[in-house]
Image (cartoon, rainbow, N blue to C red):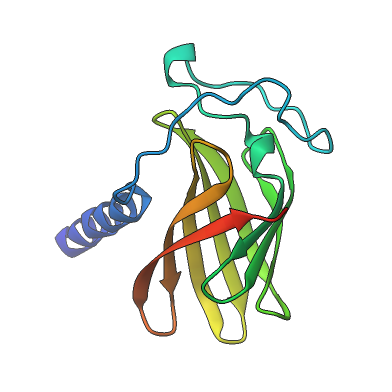
Length: 154
């Protein structure tokens, strides 16, 4: 029984490690009128001093310049789910896409599950100007993490 308890603590610590921000501070208010209108309304969940940009700011196409990968956020929902597609250049299955507000930042988590993508993940934060997603790509096959950024598609 003690081994299960220790294993549980180790699992909780590792989850906490991956949810922890990685060397980026991205926080700024969103200028009025810059939110797309094709997404679900989302009520703020934080106090005004720590309010992150509206999750609708994530909606749109995002290109990773180091390889031409495309992340498309089609919609965000009040419960934290996001509808996403990923292309490299062919479509890669997105198993999960979620957004959250954390420490005044708007964050996006995307999990890929497909051939050569057995649980690879992106943990991204929206830049202050709303034009980049910056974060960590976990490449599951190699078991390595890479700093990445996506630029908003114009």
